[in-house]
Length: 226
Length: 189
Image (cartoon, rainbow over all chains, first blue to last red; front, side):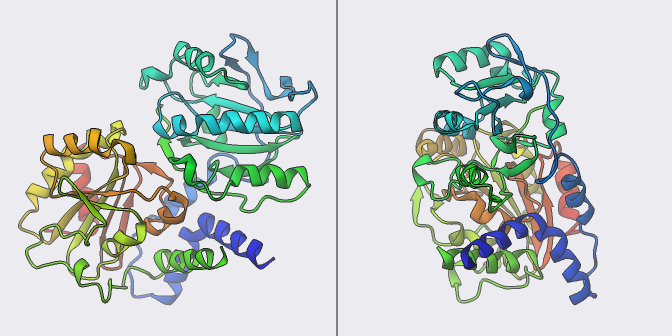
């Protein structure tokens, strides 16, 4: 319990650290001038969907040429999913590449349990040519992606979700409420050094009707190119 | 497990709260000299003269100096295009402020396997050796908030600080002027 609490506090701090600390500073150190950009942090938070809010559905083109929405997706057994593992990722970011096998493994492990991966490529190919639709198709074929790999053409979906990096995860429940947001695990660059599998733990919590702890982590990766 | 977590919480409290004012006590290696030259802490290893640190704790004192030098700490990697694009402004800034109490630190987050093949040639080609160090710590979630709670996790990212005053820039700069504006929030010549 204590451990959970600790993790929870840590999670909260990741979210609230900036503004809370600034407020404290206001009270404790009135002599310090306050030209810092508190508002910027808040503004960044206000964009996109927070944990506990409902994520919108979308219609995006998959590498198979068909258009998909979350409502169309089935899990590995052909049933309506119990949740969606939405991952903004791409071909070109080295951290996304380093995470690729983990994303494939996650889908293979959890799609049969009702939680398929929904990969979305948000980069503008005009800026990041290696992330064009044909390059996506080639990569998906080469690696035999078992999940949909959708193209956020026009870069319209990722800003609504509030994604800023690849790879970045939004774990949704069956009704598209965000239950976890952030990183796949605690070692995006080096799969062999993973100690805490944030996303997997969060899915396991959902399967037990529990609230994921931590509900938010920072996703370290490449800024989305748009 | 409990202890490291508690430890990180303490550090988070330390780094995002009143922070900054804590000097890197009892670590003579991290004390700046008076010539304003770069003075990285003693590294675990050197790679063609570039200091390499395995843990964030090894370079943490660099982010908590309490003296009258302003530190411009940039996190980057050779594989990161916007990072590479803004690097010239940091070297220009370094030259322009060479005689002033301003230090530029370029901390590379390159992949461990690409240090010899990519980073070393890159640094030598651009004569960046005096500015660059490598941080291998891939447990980003444990330390990015210690640099700044504002840091989203994307690079480039730049922290400019003097003592307790900190200015964080979470995006690339596109000119020397833009970088100087950031610097000027903390330091005016």
